[in-house]
Length: 407
Image (cartoon, rainbow, N blue to C red):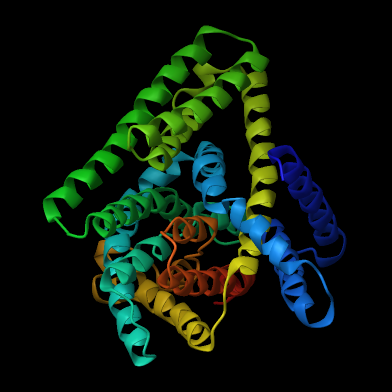
């Protein structure tokens, strides 16, 4: 299947599912699309029993589509920039302490907690999984997904102060999670772990991403300020996102963090000087549409991952318990510090509960697990990740509004 035909299928499915959701289900956009796509995937899976569909060919088609590369190399940069550009930095910086703790220390601590519990649980089920793979699972599932979070929270009527903290955390912690994952994956390939090598790689990816984002954002600001032609200015933002994200990843610097920083700069740094009111309107509307369209494609893609999983009973049990492991780790990094060190995070009790439950996982986690080298362990981690994402989007995503309304 060529790229254009694949794009036609994805856009047609996205439009069809979006219409069904808006007309009948009336669920939040990303939840509705993910739910319908998941149902379609289950129907295709069950077709082996009640209908003779070319399931093997469909599975091979999805495997050859390289969903991980589509998400990590293409969609992620656009979505992170769009999400960051529409985020108010003045509100983010008022909560920067708690956001920084969640995004940095939270990811590192969560990775270790999840890895340890996952190793114990796998041994109880007589599944031999090396600890490095447990750490990789911890790293890929620890970051809350900014795409899922922003897409759901904006419709969930969560208090603005709490929403800013969750969105701010999700925008930055995915970059930290990707950096930790890349460093651990490098360890897997080399066969030996070096703390100094890990530290250097982490600093290169994370700090380098922030610096590149600042440079690109400022240069883009200067270009936008020098002209007043909204068509050209929209095109400039598009070029900087595509070129900047690809360049960052090519030189082994976090393209995710670079796009977050650049997006924050475009949306907040002297915006009224850089762009006229008309240009601001067109730039923001353009990226809102990009965000909606790519979100639709993303959540259809991650639902179709279900078709490439080889299920076994022990793997399913481990996957189900992984949901509780991830939730428990979230309690450890958010709710416990709130109870024992209240001044550290400065959270209210209800706010801590919402942030704990609002740690949604999405396409980023699945893309990372799909990028692992082929092995039986990869399939185990894929099942565990899928169950966590499924629960996160359909259960947490649908109930967070009710939690926000409780007194």
